Length: 195
Image (cartoon, rainbow, N blue to C red; front, side):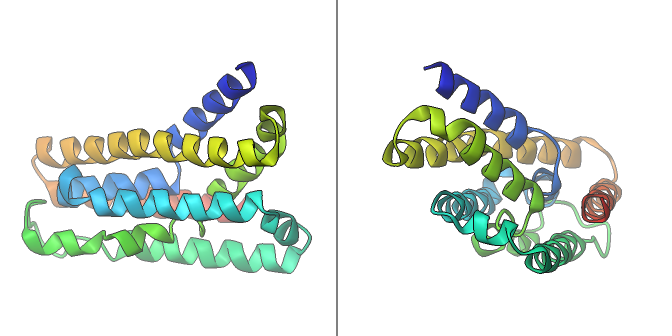
């Protein structure tokens, strides 16, 4: 039980803190609202499930052994995060409830965020290497790690999305708020990639 509590505390902290995925989901909330961003959130969760399965079955070891792959992966991930954020840049002062904006954050956009997010790789690798072994056999570790991440993501990504929606609704110039969040996302991604 203590091993699971340690894993849960780690996952809640890692999933809940600001990072590229939470900033992008906050942009989705500001532009589309929580209800219209549910598909995107489920895409984020599905992508993280795939990532955890890859790492759990040993793919993370292969990536860690190749610095060239790591560098290429980091640049690809940064480019995708920046692309996803910048394509949401408001072109006018349209309100977040415009129906045409909902197409910007779909399930398929979300599914690639975590597999291309260096923070997600680090947190998954740490969960598998530092916390999972204390849970028991691999066949116990696999559902526990994957489901813990999925449930925490559903709650915490939804919270970040809702906070974006509240900010977008409560501040008078939604386009400025969205531009500020997009700029913060781009700067965060660049800082992560350069460090």
